[in-house]
Image (cartoon, rainbow, N blue to C red; front, top):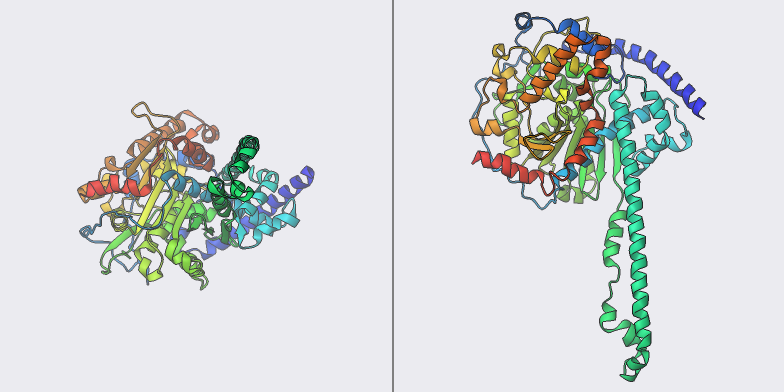
Length: 604
């Protein structure tokens, strides 16, 4: 069987490589002019690692002077959501803030902060493995097709998906362990480890339950023996048999309702995945939608960067300027990362945009059951690129919540997300949070390089020599540029409540987890200054930049990727390892409580 798996894996890799080359040609022909600028950014439709040749390319092009970099910078042409994207002017002076009280009081029982973080992290990593396994199934590369083909049928119970992944784990790891699928392989390992821990936990609970039953049985037996010993006394006192065993205090013995309630909860229809859109997984945005009847939520997950198009999307850091959707006037403009915006809102071949497509599925799932509209909430998540798309989708969804008739607030839990928009976008985002229309938990590892970019917009084309591009490689060319020459509306800003995860406890505090609100400066100052010192991740940005520069100076490019430790901080395994370490730090906290403490207090 192992030999057969190796043959299948080798055959699939070869066919996928040929398929990737053809897809590159078709992608290059169909993309817009702005995307063609970055057409040489990568060389295959596979999941790139963050280092390797990407950093080597950065070495070749990262030594340019700041003056040369500034000369390359050109002001971004304005774009709009409708009509010719170049016919909409940039935003004028920022309008006054219209803030609410950050009061998320509702009948909905939001989970704890740690529960929300862990469940969404797991979902954001699961989509990597699911889409890869479904691609294998469509190509006939499975160890056990009779059972594993179920992965293509919808709806798909979460437990069934996990069982199939476990059954096909050896095949998956063999195919993914080729040096080109770092993020997907890391996500797979997380899924397998989580399943192992879950089974161990279930086994422990079962052992405890059996032990408790045995203990109760022993105590009941002792009690029964006492009754028998006093049998004659009971009859002499005039008690009947029925009164002894069915009446009085004995009649109020626990009838098992408590256990029945727990059992009923376990027997509720398990979490189901109703939609997985990955039929064109190498050419389009990949997402999945699930329903959790226990937590009463509908969750949408967007896959992170895997393909050439994914990385080209991240690389396209031009700023697109569009009308702000949350205000009535069309004169208020916001700036959004062009790659993310076009990935979500562009329409090709007469098909609806991914935003409209996902929104249609979400509305249908909410309307299928009236109970969902009354009691369920919408959650959005994703890792890396997926987190950025989730942030953008959630912002637009909350801006037009009444139009789509979805229950508010919308909750975003982004993992390892880059920045999405400029100051005007961040201000508008903060307003939606203050009005209890939007909640955003942004999980970021300490020194994860992807979460530190982009710093500012640039229309400068990537050097044609950068044939293997990654966010990390581009970080060097962008993070050290002088922002004094950049307009305010071309600077990118983070949003939401940041949950910073450290691998070790820093000497200045007693906790691995740091919670901060990205909108604090907006609330306290109204405007952020031009200085990068006001970025909440300034320390990480400077540290990553300096370490990368030292690595480029001291090491050969061939060894750089393996030695550059911060690359691994972005992968799912690093997040899955760090999050459990902070459970005690955030015990008893909720996201709503943090908004009251860190946002509402500043606003007063």
